[in-house]
Image (cartoon, rainbow, N blue to C red; front, side, top):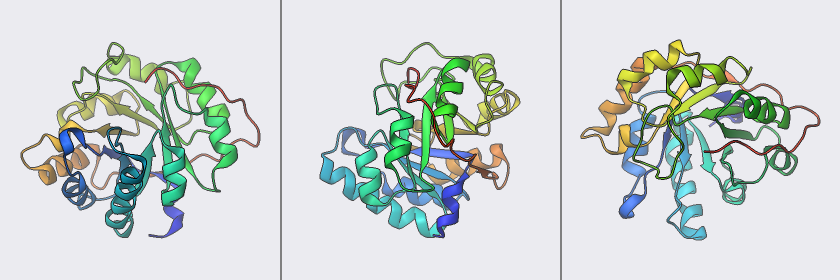
Amino acid sequence: MPRSTRGLVPALHVLTDTRGGRDPLPDVRAVVASGPCAIQVRAKDLSDRDHLALTRAVLAVARPAGCLVVVDDRVDVAIAADADGVHLGASDLPVGLVRTISPAGFVIGATVRDAVAARAADDSGASYLGVGPAYPTTTKPGLPDPLGPEGVAAVAAATRLPVIAVGGVTAARVPALRAAGVHGVAVVGAVSEAIHPAAAAAALAAALGSPPTPLAVPPAPRSGSEAPTASR
């Protein structure tokens, strides 16, 4: 895949689902067939070596299709696998620090819940923002109350960065989120729990726009604070 795609943020982001020993690669193959996308490798239940192996396997599927691959939380795994970037949550390394140790063109996503955190992540060099949970979700326990489209809109209005809504997202909810000002959406269960993951991915892509157009990543600031991201 041409490295120029590192400078683009797709509208459709799909997180791998390894819960219960599930193999996420069939879902990845289904998703990349739907058009431009980002695959976020989330594998909290895997060992470091297995996490690295999964990331490389996802890259082997997604990169030839022109899809972005970022690793959830694990900067070390992302860099070791030569992934396109990383997505950082509240307890992960600060965005500004990761920007200083990552290669040129590295995509850094940051999860935020309010305008203050959005501006801080932008100042620290984030490439895009994950905002949520937008709706109730059972995929990840212990999350704060859902923001709803209104809460997501408040964050989107406060930043120049592409906003990706996450949490309880379905194709039917995409129009309301688009109206709230988001660039795209991130999903787990909407694909992994679907009877036909390929059809689910295609429906999400169609709701976002066919094909969902990637946005250019704003250039990282030359210097910035290492502000923590907000609660994930």
